[in-house]
Image 1: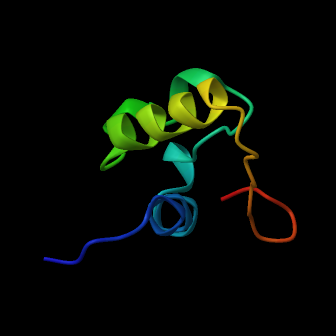
Image 2: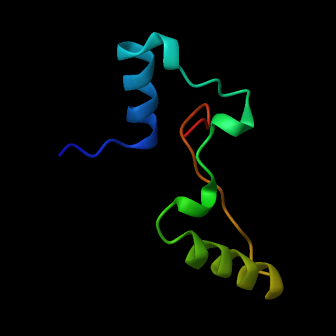
Amino acid sequence: MTHLSFTGKRWRLRTTMPDRTIDLNAPHTLVPPSVFPDMDRAVERIQRALRDGERIGIFGDYDCDG
């Protein structure tokens, strides 16, 4: 079984199933963040950083779409 990333799944849908493309401007078509692995740990860490006055850095690719 092949495991595709979220971006890979979007690409596959757009290239193999044009009638089932994902509209990125329609929030109901996006995967909820709660299903990402370890999201609960990430939320706890961000909350701790905010509570303790730590700086938070955000990294992404050049256009920050995923």
